[in-house]
Image (tube, rainbow over all chains, first blue to last red; front, side):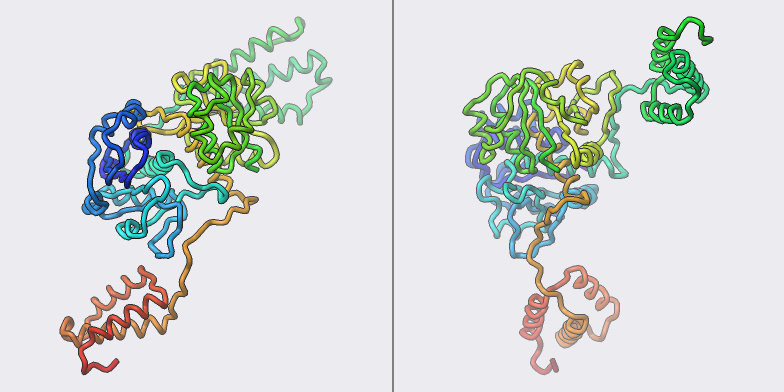
Length: 244
Length: 244
């Protein structure tokens, strides 16, 4: 359950990042935000940049220490750009992390912990974590803005949730026009061939050209309406003495 | 090649979003930015929020129309939160979009197009695109901040690139200490059993407990150093008359 997934920000310097984090969370169905010793909070900047996610900001809990933020969690993943020499279990891919986090979140509280903008998490704070994850990035410039790191990992978590057996997420799809029958398609291709011959484009039936066009329209997947449109066009350019 | 992947922003209102977009791009190895009629550019806010990605901002091209931005591209994906009634090919998952985009980018220019903060892309602009993609999100609050949408899609593109056959990306992994041999592990488990019996914790060898502990340490994957550490601890608590 997404409600079991907590986002923890440690000593955030810019209140704007708190607001943008709240927004990033809400777009991905997350609502539980805990702030450990934020420098400036509450703050207008946080509210302003939350842009519709003020409820997440308003409900955010403020605590003194990281242990207070995560004591009730069974899994705590530290998001860290730097790899430490302490070999905490580490996820190479955020996707793997998200899958396990979501699995645990079905029954227990879990947390994703983010550090300071400039300094990340201390080694001490990493020790409060059960796992580490980093976001694979440009080796020459690999540090994401804090709220953007939250957005990426929240996106992966939401994705893992969408794909999990229990979720009720409904994929929005564009409206789907009715496809034609094979017979209707055949009539269209016959019509197309006739016009290509009548116009002189083909001097005789040409199997390869016709196969190519059949493949093209197979990929295009015209709807019934679109097929009508095409046939109407063919009729308009058809030389007058051709049988339709 | 990542260099063939262009990010196009149409009529961006907040110059800060341009800066944050540049940063998001650079973290994911992208450098080609084109701005169609930005409201305010160049601008100090764009430079300030680029935070190390000023080179991407400085190299950004400004054009008057979307066609000027994408004429040389073989694939143009419009990022759109709203699904249109015009049934342009649509990717349900950014992951699928990224895979195809990266594949095309191996040999040709491609583009990802983002619209205005409030209004997205017009239907006209969508028609300049070969595909649409949307980021699956919270149905109740699903509009990501512009630069965060760029970050998510750039992340997926970078991921597709990392996993593609041609890439030379090297996964950073934490340093890997040397694992022990099976014999060393066996000695450790024998030592552990002895201490458990000597201390009275087990009155006799107990197969199930020992199997449980062997499984636990199999999952922990202790390095040689860690095994030494554990054996040192066992020796220190070992009652004096036990044979080591």
